[in-house]
Length: 266
Length: 266
Image (cartoon, rainbow over the protein chains, first blue to last red):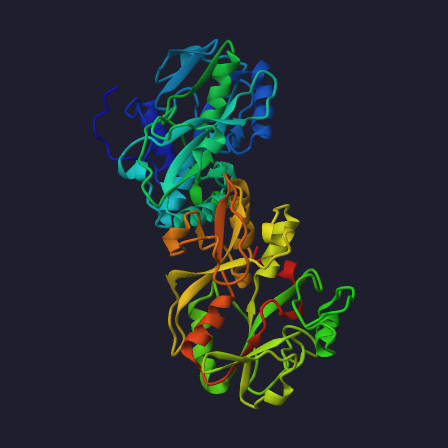
């Protein structure tokens, strides 16, 4: 997975072309700044209704940005010319809940009953927080955000259920208050935090041991602030042991033509 | 200060008439529910500009709802027929920073250079919180809210300066997040909290010993949430040792004709 240096894409179309050509084969952080990126889940049509119902019932971890028609690899509302079979830098293929492959292209696996779900991603609200002057430690340290399985249960739908996964960012109290305001405006990218403060209240025993991503220090005088996380639906897929599912690889998102600033609800 | 039972007023005009007639001579909590109540400061014109500048520079503790013309006891934008000399249940008269009297009428003290300032009050946002289902312990216990002097300095203006005074309400994390959202919509009644969590960060040594009002317990699993408080300008007046100032007595507010729900910024 080597990646020679290329300047980051400045538009969604450029980022997708870089992924399609194989030039971009890892994470999309820093690509097409200002543009909405999305988590991707692809399922056979027989599971699509239950999965959509799961997203609808759990809007904070699973805010749906788009759902494709069955068999149609385009997503016209998210960008011109998107081909979801080629436009992610890297995919994960799951069979019966087990990760079996991480290809950079899924044309060979495509089925004419596949439905694509695109789910809002924290990159959008992190950009809004940083634009406001709030510093994000995991970004300054060039780490993945720390994520945890919680004891908050999601609302089940069909075979899909499981714990809410949250991401955590340490902040001063003043920044935490401002972050609630900023992210409340962005309901399609996880919205307001789900918890502030004591991790034990949501079943997290040790902040230094995240279940996904990398730990960051919570310094004296800081509060851990927790947001619902787009890993939640992936965890539900794995737990459901569906026969076949394809997702983006961690951090290798769909870069869209939408602008983050257009997501604000007010 | 006995107060025979009367049913609470249902309009601002009724509450003011009750105060004017002497029938209502204590706090206005529960009067004219749904109507905006305000903190009152009355100063000679020579101090008015500096005090207005102080409010302008400190909008969270001192959100100005109205400023009268010099010598004019009416406040037309807040209610029909208001006479600020008679329409508060009880006043406090301050000379050189010392409390010298607590009359129920200030007609005998009125000067033709007096300017009245009306400042937003937490009663408005507490109503919005409770309407949303957030329980407020001090109200359930029928106590005054706990208030504390902090180490957060206000922006000085002329003779006015001093520490920000905050009110504290204990809440679950989920309620604290919701409370940030609700009070952010209400910038004219103190707006979003100024702090959440560790009281020591804002110079409060012991939550069980408030500087004003009554202590309430912060239970395990709760966060103390702190809002800028309308006592701040009163503390600044006292600290400035102005020759003469008149304020409302604690809890004995001006009841206006404005509706709390009309304060929402969005």
